[in-house]
Image (tube, rainbow, N blue to C red):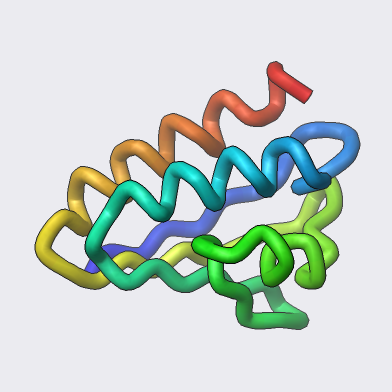
Length: 88
């Protein structure tokens, strides 16, 4: 299991487009992926679950990946979140 915290830095948080991209990215991996804010646990393989977590700018989310491709998944998720601030 690998786990990492990410701070959402883009102005609008995880709205529909980045939520959809995050979901598509997570679905590429066999590993179980869980997300957690201080207020809600969410499934990053579900756009609805991401959107209902109401992840806004400044929110710290913890991503936990557990499975055969966990290292690769966390690497790609790190790239996603690192690039998020400049794209939206």
